[in-house]
Image (cartoon, rainbow, N blue to C red; front, side, top):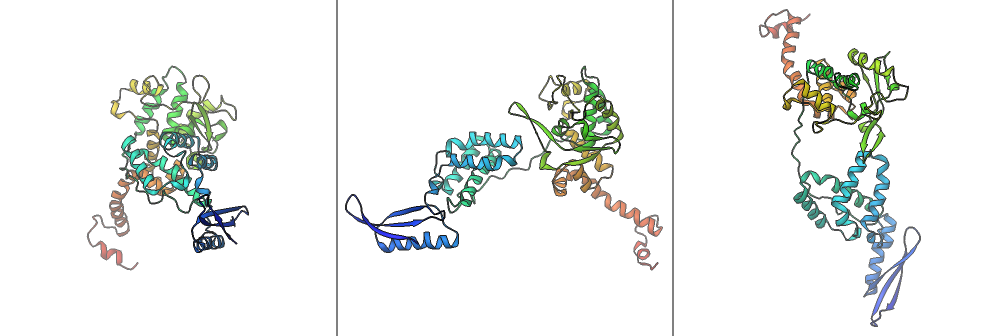
Length: 391
């Protein structure tokens, strides 16, 4: 229940105050009403009815600052993020959100302000830079709505830029070129055989680099020909961070004989929980790129003499594994499980081009099947009659 009382202001004017208890039992008030009827109407709508329907909004809640709420949001979300995601979110907050919003009261932010802010990010940093900062503000405001600090989310309904569909620079190696790359890597002055085994593993089994970096001796079952992908190792903020594979999809991947033959000698030198692949100093393997002119990856490609436009990056070996699996007859579901995608639709989205040839083969395969069933050498000659003829 709300209690309405009259009081005098410093100027001697009559005003009305609504005293009431919040849902948590603490007492507060709302003052400044010129007429008693106005105070009664406000109390009925914002206290009595709101408490009864669960829609009560604390008038003081809107005064909380975004910076404080950001700390709460991070504390709730960070346990569920991988190290790279947390680092990216921290960077987005510092670059695009902190200076603009940290000291603002949550209840004072308007939809128009957020829309203008999104536009300013596009102008300064480009459309691709909007996603993470907007995700942060949307998350903070959604949390505030959930906690009944504000009645609605000012980030809802914001118009976001449409990003052009990214055209990946993707290279699929043939088995011949994959073996050539692996064999040339074995000629590195140090760890040649390990690097050969790494390339074969990436190119035939489709592991991500971080999954290969986190691979331990105990993860390889040579008797069953199975590789257990259980962890991911990445270098973030100048330190190594170990977590689960992307999408938390732990999986078992079959190893072709060529991969097992390359890994066995290496694993014989490892303890049960030691990492399979190590750098020259004994630490985890660092990810290679074409930008590192001094890296063993670029040196290997240089010795091969391939055109620079045809140089694969390490992730192209994952694409290569997908391509080789499809051409070997793997269906979408098998490819999804091998690559650790969240679902088969994601696999189709990423590798739709690999299945285009399957679509073109449908008519040819149907023609061949009809030939076998009907005994007609050239399809199209009385095929319909033969198919409909009772057995």
